[in-house]
Structures are given as structure tokens and as C-alpha cells.
Image 1 (cartoon, helix red, strand yellow):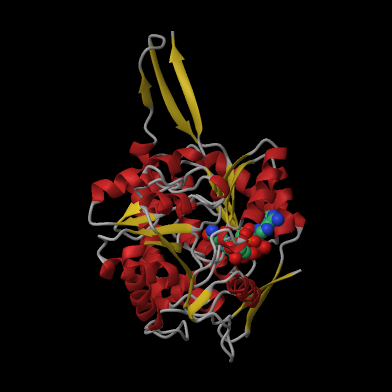
Image 2 (cartoon, rainbow, N blue to C red):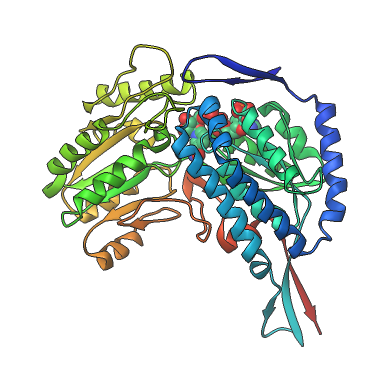
Length: 454
Ligand code: NDP
């Protein structure tokens, strides 16, 4: 079966790749396993110098890499360059901090002396999505390589050129030939990869469906998994919030990357005192976005990544309207070429409607009016997801207290929910389990080994 790169702005097929055969895949896994035998013995300094070189290459190539993303999945080039710079930052961070984060940890109160070591385990399988085709890969690959593991990447089938470019960057940075490999394979071959004895774990970012399938397959083989799945982040606005900042961030969060972000604000929960003002300002702000050619510098929103995902989003919008929602902005697929979807705001959807519990993976804001902070928290938690959320209020102490009641992996106060190299990132509930980034991310795929003397 062929893996195809298609421009979602034009429908043009850019290139077609033959999927690797099971035999080719097995060969790569064997090569990776053998390369790992020496890689595991390298010093942190050796690993760090290569990661630092990868960061330099990313910065040098940022425009070219942003262009590949624009062509394959529609990300505006300005946002693409930002993504590449962020990949360089995660390489820098683990190059600089990795050794200290993995330093043996002394443990008091047992034996004559005891400590914990963090040892590499083998080859990590990463199954990645198309929405941040570089960042999602680098944020798991950089710590894993620094920890002494090998990595194989099964990228989403619509971004093969990104997948190959990433493999090339690691090679050019001086990593041993087979320590990071891209597998051009479809979803059906993932189980066979998990069968390889050298593959000790899998990290997947993507939909709940893919997460359930891959986590089950890993569980059946007693292999560890980390799941970074969808989200339906609440964005809570209290009456004393700075509405200018809140609206600016709401627009960026909901419409950046054309709304195709797991930690995008998706449900806007606004106290009745400022509800009308918030909706009016959000409408003005989202209407001002420039939608168009992702290769153009002035574009804020490119096309969605594919026609089927746009159809799915329209189906969800239709169900919002059928349930009683009102589209105060957008809400329909525009005519013309390309998988474009306009910025959309829907109010008045009854909270019991099933669609409110789904992830809307596109530039569609659902806005809800509530009459108390308790009601805001209850609605924020009325979802199977639990990835991120934000609270907007001049009273940051009160907001911090409210944050403890929001059932998610992170809460940001008066700030954009984002992944940052220093902070553990991941969810609860249907948003998955395990953590990436920070100290937790680099230890996630190590053998946490106790050594006890006496
Ligand atoms: P998927 O979850 O289907 O794809 C993500 C990755 O998982 C891809 O590499 C995909 O491979 C792989 N995959 C999918 N199914 C399986 C399987 N059964 N076994 C092994 N690997 C599998 O995302 P989609 O692109 O289909 O997007 C669908 C929805 O998922 C979106 O609308 C959104 O709601 C959610 N999503 C969420 C993301 C997030 O960051 N939270 C990211 C992407 C999607 P292949 O491409 O070959 O199918």
C-alpha cells in the first residue's frame, strides 16, 4: 500500500512512497537493536553534543522544514517556523539538563547505602500524529535518545516527508545510523513492531481510538505505553478577568494550527456578568483572522489537514445546531478548493448534548454561560477528557484554588495552555496517561533501578 503526501490547500498529490514491507521493517528493527548495544554505553556528553548539533540543524533549516509542513498538512509557515524553533529548544534542554535529571538518586533509610539509577531499555516505538509533525516527535525523541534508548518512528500516513526529514536531521547531527529510524508503515504494521523483543515500549499521540488499539496491543505483550490523546480543554472566564488578554489568548488557542491542537481551548465557560461582552469580543477577534495559503507570510489559518477530518468537524457542528446551538460566527464549509474551515463560534448548546463530550478538532469554539464558579468547575469537569485548562481572573490566588478542582493534567492561570520543556505534560481520563517533558518525561522510558548495598 502506498503512503501519500497530499497538499490539503490544493488537493495535489505531492509524492507517493511505497510502504515498507514487513521484512524491511524487521530488518530496520534488527539494525536498531544492534546499534543500541553500543549507544547504551555512550556518555551523556557524547549524546548531548549530538542533540546540540540537531538543535543547530533545526535552526538552520527552519524555513525549509516549515515549508514541508505547510505543503503536507497545511500549517501556516510562520507557525511552522515557531514549531521548528521549539524542537531545537527541547534538544537544547535535554542536552544541557539530561545528565543531571538522570543522575543516580541517593535513598536514605535502607541498607548501608542505596541509590536509584535510570538506565536505558532498548528501542522505543513512537506512533505520532500529523498536527505538530515535528514537535510531537522531538519532544519524545530528544529525552529518549539522551537517556540512551533507540527510537523508531511510525508517523501519521499523511506526513511522510516530515517523517523522512526528521530521520535525516538525526543522521546529519551525527547520531549513529540506526539509532533513530523512520518506519514508513501503516497502522496495521504497528502490532508487528511491538512483537520485536528489542522494542520495550510505545508512546502514542493521537485519537482515543488509536490509543485504545495501541495500548491494548502493548498490554497484550506486557510492554509499557504512554498515551497522549485528545482533549476538550475548558477556558474559564471570571467576571474580573482582563477580557482583552482573555480574548486574545482564546483566539490564539482555538484557531492556532487551524484548531487542530490537543491542548486548544475548546469549551469557553464564561460567568454571566461578562458573557455577552466576551462573545462580542471573541467574534470580532476570530473574524479578523486571515485564512488562506499556508505558504503566505500573512496567513493565520491554513486549511485543515484533510477532507475527511473537515467532514467530521462539520458533522459535529451540525449536531451542535440540531441540539439547539446558535452559530454566531461561521459554521459552514466554504466553497472553493482546499480543506478550509472558517473560524466558528457556537453558543447555547445544551450541556447535556452528546457532542459537548467530544473533541472538536478544528477552529470551532463552544461558548457556555454559567452563573457561578461552582457551576463553571462542574461543567469544566463534565467531559471524559482531562488534558489541560485555563482560568482567567484578576484574583490569581482564587484562580489557583479553583485550579485544584479542575480534573486535568495541567491548568494555566491568565495564560495560554502550552507544552513547555520544563513542565510535565500529559492527561488524565480519556486524555491518556504517562508524562512527557521535564524530569518526568526523560525518566518515563528508563529502567528505574534500585541498587542497595548491605
Ligand atoms: P489518529 O489517532 O488516527 O492517528 C495518530 C497516529 O496513530 C497515526 O500515526 C496513525 O497512523 C496511528 N494509528 C491510528 N490508528 C491506529 C491503529 N489502530 N493502530 C496503530 N496505529 C494507529 O488520528 P487521525 O489523524 O485519524 O485524527 C482523528 C482524530 O484524532 C482527530 O480528529 C482528533 O480528534 C484526534 N487527534 C488528536 C491529536 C492530539 O494531539 N490529541 C492528534 C491527532 C488526532 P495512520 O496515519 O497510518 O493511520
